Amino acid sequence: MALVSLRNVSKVYPPASKGAPSVTAIDSVSLDVEAGDIYGIIGYSGAGKSTLVRLVNALEHSTSGEIIVDGQNIAVLPERDLRKVRLGIGMIFQQFNLLGSRTVARNVAYPLEVAGRPKHERAARVAELLDFVGLSDKAGSFPDQLSGGQKQRVGIARALATQPSILLADEATSALDPETTHEVLALLKRVNAEFGITIIVITHEMDVIQTIATKVAVMDQGRVIERGPVFDVFSNPQAAASARFVSTVVKGIPSPAELAVLRERHTGRIVTLAFRDSAVDQKAVFGEFSRAGVAFEVVYGGINEIQGRPFGHLTLALTGADPVIDQVLAHIRTLTTVTEVR
Amino acid sequence: MDALIDLLPELWTATYETLYIVAMTLFFGGLGGLLVGLGLYLTRAGSILENKPLFFVLNLLVNFIRPIPFIIFLAAAQPLARAVTGSGIGNNAIIFTIALAASFAMARIVEQNLLTVTPGVIDAARSVGAGPIRIIFTVLLPEALGPLILGYTFIFVALVDMSAVAGYVGGGGLGNFALLYGYRQFNPIVTWAAVLLIIVLVQFVQFFGNYLARKALRR
Ligand SMILES: Nc1ncnc2c1ncn2[C@@H]1O[C@H](COP(=O)(O)OP(=O)(O)OP(=O)(O)O)[C@@H](O)[C@H]1O
Ligand SMILES: [Mg+2]
Image 1: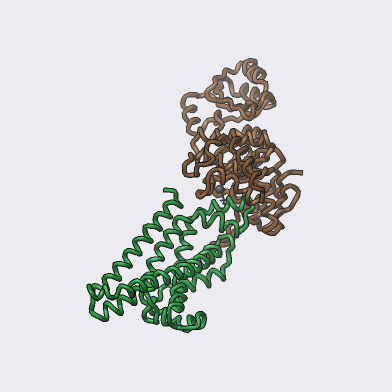
Image 2: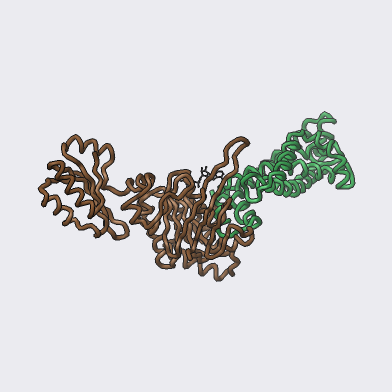
């Protein structure tokens, strides 16, 4: 049984003013997040990512459908019971949302106060958490004395205080520079690996998904249009929106502009071959060309690695008689995906 | 000048009365303003205790009472003051009326200061399971403390201002003193002595309020 399971969940916001249309932010979404996953949710602005993740800890209430967290349908729970559920779900935010009136240590202690833990226990836990995020020396500082990356680390420590089994991260690195982003992502990876905490990461940046996620769902207009292991979606995206996201990080497929340039330089036929994992035998593929006497030139390409598994694309300009090329391509199609770019 | 020296005991009594009226109204009006302001903030659309009808009523009440000039409000609220304090005149009646007017004036200031708290911080508190009461005391009030102190400092001046007309309904204080012994006796020195005391009082409180707000904001 999945740790978080959304079944046919919809969220409709009532019209902002009389006569305005209501907004369907989430449109019958079903999604399973297994314990231990780092599940990435990607989509353009307004796709419904934040709304989706806020349904999981009931900061927002669904209009219909079931939201099953750890075996319990929280969509039907009254507010009082939801507060207990929320103790088991940590959340971090794009703007960090630390309490400016409290020191770092007291920010981290906040969830423990809410949970009613005794004072000595709180102090010990806070020290442990600050050590984990590497901010022991900042315990007495106030949030406005910290850098963005440090603030987010405090946010992470706070979210972990009550030892939740789920961590929700809504654009947790979007306000950070690339360097700091990678530090925070590395920390989230440790959270997942060391404590086995399931993480749901919302982002509009594909490299966040590439860096930490194990699975990914692509959202568009309130719907999940594609989902699966990150490697599959990256190496072989099905939906057009997924392909656009993938192309922002996956190098190897020429853009239309680059294709036009290639066209000018090469008069022959141009094909793109996909190489996924070690499943495709490159020697066999190139052997086909030589055997048939079709000359080829690599004109564009790139190899990527997702979770240690390589995949890539090579674009070739071919020279030879058309019927021969057709025959070779037919053979190669049995080995891997071939896209002819005209 | 001699007249002023003769009037010194009355001047001290008046100063004491002003301090007393202002302190009492700051307490009751401040508390009322805090409650009504919190009510406005919490019941508005999208807030944690969203309640459209209640917000509508509170909002209407504040908009309705706030613009009434105090001297007119004093007369209009007299029956109510009599019902609550037992008398329509005297210091208790004026304290009641000022506190009532100040509650509504302060409510807006409180509401506006609370609105400066980023909604995300409230989300963060909700996400760890905090309920509304806890959010008020551990998030809203502490996060808005600096501006709130400045708001209360601001309302203090308005209270001194309102207390000056206490004389009209048989109350005391520096306003009454200036009117009675200065203006009516054609003795500007006496009037100016009262003015000076009020300026000193206001400056002192303003300074103290700024100091506290700075401490709260750690600047
Ligand atoms: N409180 C609200 N009231 C009304 N409509 C809302 C509310 N919150 C979100 N929406 C609408 O729901 C849709 C999804 O919003 P959401 O914030 O979930 O998108 P998102 O994918 O997180 O976008 P972004 O990347 O910009 O954060 C949008 O059309 C938005 O206007
Ligand atoms: Mg969002």
